[in-house]
Image 1 (cartoon, protein in one colour):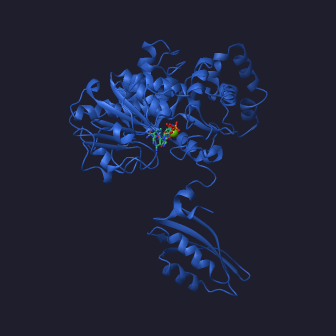
Image 2 (cartoon, protein in one colour):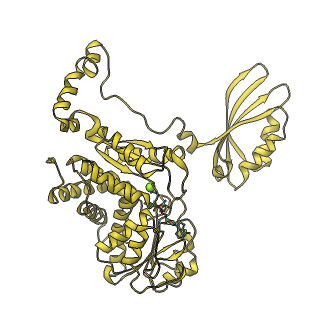
Image 3 (cartoon, helix red, strand yellow):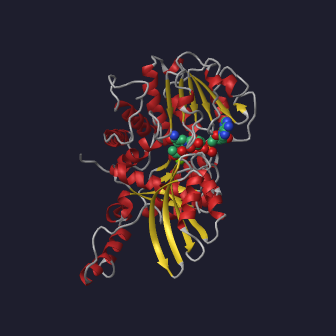
Length: 472
Ligand SMILES: NC(=O)C1=CN([C@@H]2O[C@H](COP(=O)(O)OP(=O)(O)OC[C@H]3O[C@@H](n4cnc5c(N)ncnc54)[C@H](O)[C@@H]3O)[C@@H](O)[C@H]2O)C=CC1
Ligand SMILES: CC(=O)C(=O)O
Ligand SMILES: [Mg+2]
């Protein structure tokens, strides 16, 4: 049964089983209405000897209504609440993607060509020249979306089963936005060596590997080792996809507030996969003043860190050796970049920032601060969510960057390709269009993927990692 808390504030579907000898449906309907539910549809699913099963579509507008309805129904004799669902849960029934053959198998002739004996000739051709796998198998257009479930959105270490809906969602986005066939793979291990071995073992069928929601610091080693040991692009989306989109939005926000990157004071909160990569991209773009904050406060070179990535971070940022927590870090800062946890940026902290502050609260699903709590005191605010303007989400990057990499059969996705992707995304918004509510294009802007693809291919060719010419 779905979690009641997750279902409030929308329409829920309750399946009721009635013992028609003992219970009257009217009583159930009254109990639901009295508990605050508004029944908007009733579907009879089954009727039989003394039993009737109905699906009730109920509007629940207040927090806790679903729970109250469940409790009220439990009091009634002869009525059993079988299940509670809603449109989101229904959409997930049986998963969100499927695999479909490209051609039908209608007769023996078809069968012998897609399968044995004819398929053997294709196998032998690939055996003689393995690079033919790129043309003669799904490797040409397929990306593995690999997670260990250790840092799923901002939900934390919820494991591989619970990670699947996100990975299926990523696969849908790959297909819809860039026609890349992506397959979700959630591994039941969080051991670095086991993950590396598993991805290497499954790589033959894929043209690229999109690592997703693998926690820092293990994600760094996994990505570096796989990049070195495989000949297809390996890209940790939470690091580089996020950094590319962040950088694109930053270029436009700095332009809008008339700031130069080298003079801008940045605070990055959450020095994990996304925070580290965003910082590296800003440094590569010329940023000079960055302070990183994690749970234990500001990262400073005055401390020694067990984590190699934090030590690197402390050594390359916070040149003024500031110490303290998020509030102290934000004193005089121009930009807050949150890739940490929901609700941790207080309105009063923003008051400590420089004038016209830029706030990118990118934690998912709950941002570090909600726009309605800060929009009157900031110059620009952005989140990772699709229900507010300025959605800074890696979905603006990964479909197009992989489309480009697959098209030119790039061996890697390198820094030049990431920078090209960021500039492409930023360029979709013209100077005339640029405004506080429009610093980053919508995911549904069709120019994004095409522009990213075009510039990424060019960058791959120029930097020597393209293995195939692309004809536009
Ligand atoms: N909008 C977007 O496109 C993206 C958003 N994100 C979001 O960013 C967040 C982090 O993701 P990852 O870097 O992949 O995870 P991660 O697990 O690698 O890193 C999270 C970091 O945040 C720190 N953190 C947690 N609570 C904190 C707090 N109260 N104060 C300061 N630091 C805190 C953790 O200690 C850790 O270092 C998640 O909420 C995720 O949904 C991540 C990738 C893309
Ligand atoms: C957007 C994304 O990849 C995340 O929040 O983890
Ligand atoms: Mg992610």
